[in-house]
Image (cartoon, rainbow, N blue to C red):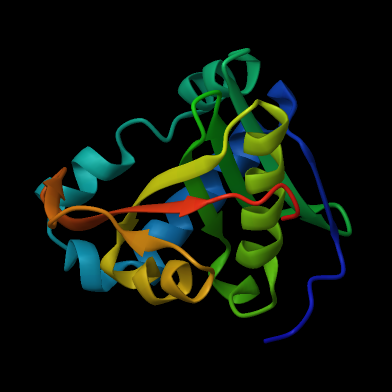
Length: 162
């Protein structure tokens, strides 16, 4: 894995269109094992990846949406809520395995700590499961089906030094 040499910053409303493109391409191109190119699953998964909805996530004070930027291109998108739930962690397909998801995850965990959390939770796809397990996450319950996709509820206790 390469080390990400860009930077991570808070998203601004003007980032919504690019953030949507990152999420859509990541889902369409990297998560095939999850959606199996089934239109009904893709429709549900992509339905909230619109600039208007993403802008609402960006301006929501109970949410922190971050973007990973390389040069002037948004290459990753992540989000964590006030309760420590990581709700997004997507990268452009051509930026995969460059340390971007790892850097976003560390920034999201730091944000969760800043918000007073001692634990992060998330729901992983099959595609991302190994990544989260390698980052110290544990499966917390049995598998669930969200939007027709098999998912793994996970958690990680935070030590304050992410």
